[in-house]
Image (cartoon, rainbow, N blue to C red; front, side):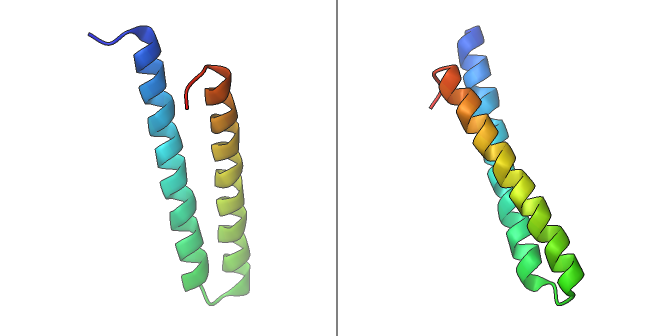
Length: 66
């Protein structure tokens, strides 16, 4: 049976992984777009995802998860 700490560790790691995958997908989509407006939209979405990754990493360090 997992401890509360292990459950929290796993949840944070999964969130971080999903956020990384999302940012990578937005970067791919940005490169595929030919419309400059859509490129900017995907660029903004990628940047927001990278910001969330950074916040999650910081929170994980605060909990001693790395």
